[in-house]
Length: 304
Ligand code: HEM
Image (cartoon, rainbow, N blue to C red; front, side, top):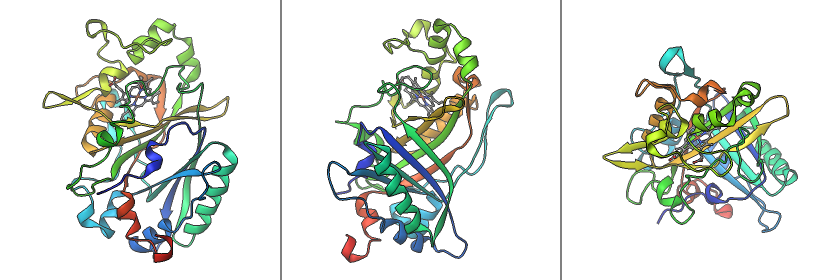
């Protein structure tokens, strides 16, 4: 049996730190993985934190080729869309997400994690996420309405038993900065057409009035007549003058994430997501988030 990393599904945390690291030259993939697995999360319940670990797909494949989805690759080139639009590729080697009830506990663990992996990797980017009005994005819209319920989310978001990488998941991680003044200059009815849902209660537009370029239209993907879902754990980031969305999307395969992005950019279907006119992707990376059993193979015995 393969168990996904539990923090992926641990809802309700108010404070988040996301760290992306670059491997130090001369460090082997195995040395990196062993070091990361040795990070000690606090083993208490109330003051505890959730830590989730992801690797550049090519790095994980180098240590566990049989336990990596076949086609998985990093966000290694910008994604070009319609009208000269493009999303940047800023792939790093290692991703850590530390989440907890308050900022002090995630701060302490993040510092400890950085110190632990310091011989093997250094921080390239750091982002703090926080929850805004329970589950709203900084556009003011509820984010996560169409997320699968926790009863089925692990099935939707993780690789099934028997397939390479079972219990693992593919993460798309992006920082989006909002053009808040332009967004807030739009009347609410127009904002709703951009998203494809109402602002107050997140009701989806009926099919006959759903704009083709709405965010909901662009991110709804079908394969063989069946809708393909992902599990999103987005948070707000930033300060009052510059802020946006940390997009944290988990999927059982890379293809549906890639298709959502391509549809947003207008690379598939030729229609660009209206939301991309009010928020800009600053970063973009894919990480493989292995199962607990896959990670534990790299733990020293005392830690396992
Ligand atoms: C600034 C960036 C983004 C913002 C502010 C944003 C916001 C939203 C909002 C408000 C909704 C409607 C409520 C809901 O179902 O959660 C939504 C839906 C959704 N978004 Fe995003 N999103 C962003 C980026 C992305 C990206 C990059 C992807 C995928 C690659 C994505 C995938 C989805 C999906 C799959 C849905 C549900 C569609 C459905 O089945 O109705 N979003 N998003």
